[in-house]
Amino acid sequence: MKFPASVLASLFLFVAETIAALYLSSTYRSDGDRMWQALTLLFSLMPCALVQFTLLFVHRDLSRDRPLVLLMHLLQLGPLFRCFEVFCLYCQSNPNEEPYVSITKKRQMPKDGLSEEVEKEVGQAEGKMFTHRSAFSRASVIQAFLGSAPQLTLQLYITVLQQNITTGRSIIMSLSLLSIVYGALRCNILAIKIKYDEYEVKVKPLAYVCIFLWRSFEIATRVIVLVLFTSVLKIWVVAVILVNFFSFFLYPWILFWCSGSPFPENIEKALSRVGTTIVLCFLTLLYAGINMFCWSAVQLKIDSPDLISKSQNWYRLLIYYMMRFIENSVLLLLWYFFKTDIYMFVCAPLLILQLLIAYCTGILFMLVFYQFFHPCKKLFSSSVSESFRLCLRCVCWSCVRRKSSEPVVSVDTDIKSSTDQDQGQDEDQDEDQGQDVTPSTSRLSPETTEMWSAVDLYSA
Image 1 (tube, rainbow, N blue to C red):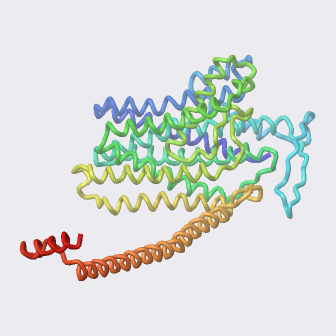
Image 2: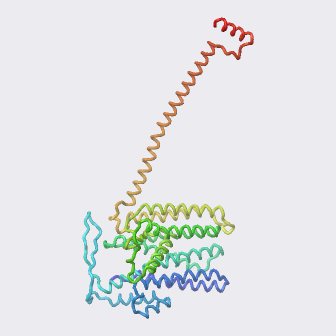
Image 3: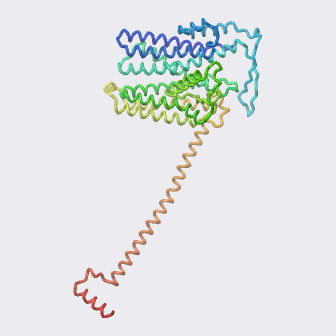
C-alpha cells in the first residue's frame, strides 16, 4: 500500500491556512478593521464547512450510524479525524491477511498499438484507502477555489491599498497560493483518472512539476490582474466577476437543456430529486469557481452518468485561453489608463509586459505537459504539435492563396485602366475630327451663323 502523502498534504494546507486566517483576523480586529476581519473569516470558515460536508458525502456517513464522526465534523475537526483513520489503516495493513478481496481490471497503456488487460486484487484496506484519497482530493479542490482563491485576492487587494505587507498577510498569501495550485493539480489528476478510468494511469514526477509550474504562472497572473483592476475600478469588477461566474455556471445547464436528456437520478440513491438538484448546483458552482481563475481540465456534463465529459476537446481549451488572454489584456489596459497615485513608483508598461509574458509562460508549460508528460498521450487522436502544425498550414495556405489572388486582381485592374485610357483617347480623336469637319456654332460670329442658315435653306 502506498504512503498517503496526498492526504497529509491536503490536511497540512487545510490546517495551516485556517490557523493563519484566524491569526490574521485577530490582527485586523486589534487594528479596528472590522470589514477586513469579517471577509477574512468568511473566506476561511465557508470552505471549512464545505470540506466537512464533502467528506461526509463521499464516505456516505449521513446514512450510517456514526455519531462520533458526525460530532467531529460539526466541530470542524473532520479532516483531522479522517487523517487519523488513514494512518491507522496504513499502519495496520497486511496484504497476507486480507480475507476478502475484489478484482479490478485495468488496461495498460498501448505499446506498438497493443493494449493488455491486467487483473489486480484490491483488499478492503486498500479500497478504504482509495476512498479516503478520493475524498481528500475533492476537499482540496473545494478549499482551493471556494476559499483560498478569494482569500488570496482579498489579502493582495488589502496589501495594494495599504502599500505595506505584514508577516501574517505574507504567510496566508503564500499558503493560499500553494493551496490553489495544489487544488488545480489535484483537479488535473482527477480529470485524467476519470476520463481514462479503464486504463492504469501512472503520473510521472516530471508531470507533477510541469503541472505545478503551469498552474502557478496561470493562477498568480490571473489574481494579480483582478487585483490591479479592482484597485482602480471597484464597481466594474463586479460586472466582470458576474459575467465570468454566470457564463460558466449556466453553460452546463444550457447544454443539458438543449440535449433534451431526462433529469439524472443516479447520482446517489439516498438523495431525493431536490437533493440531487442541490448537489448538481453545487458542482456547477465549483465548476464556475475553478474556471474563474484557471482552466478546469474537466468538462461538466450533467446528462452523463459520470457527470464528466470524457472526450478531449482541444477547441474548448484553445477558445478558453484565447478569451482569457484577451480579457486579461483588456483589464490591464483599463488599469493603465485609470491608475491612481498609488502606482506612482510602478513602471506600468513593464508590469503589463511581465504579466502577459508570465501568462504565456504558463500556457507554454501546459503545452509541454500535453506534448511530453501526459500519462495518456498515446491515446490522443492528435497531439499538440500536430494540431499546431495543422494551424500553421492553414494560416500559410490562406496567406499563399491571398497573395496568389492579388496579382490577378491587379492585372485585371491594369487591363481595365488601359482599355479605359484607349477608349478615352479614341473618343478624344473622334471629337477632334468632328471639330475639324463641323465647326461649332458657339464660336462663330452672328454674320457667319446667318450665312450658314441661308445655305441650309437654299439646299433644302
